[in-house]
Image (cartoon, rainbow, N blue to C red; front, side, top):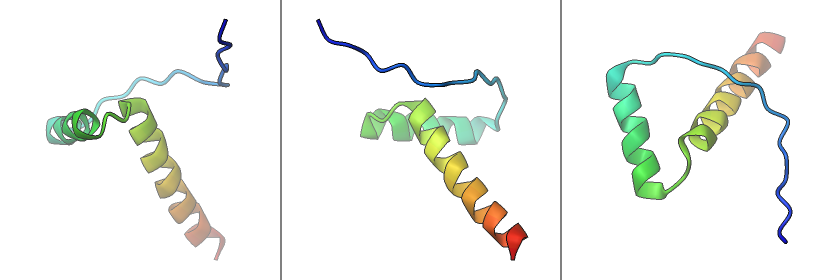
Amino acid sequence: MKKTKKKDIVLRSFSMDRSLGERLDEYSDETRIPKTAIVEMALEEYLDKVCSKEKE
């Protein structure tokens, strides 16, 4: 039997502009990357960029 990894997660709920949501849907469909993974990567990259500027 295959073991599944359990991620340490927290649930969030948010709204976004319709056109941004549609772009997310299209990109996810084209790449087969889950929307959660896309949002996590984008948010992490954004926060790394913003937080590093604040420290300078």
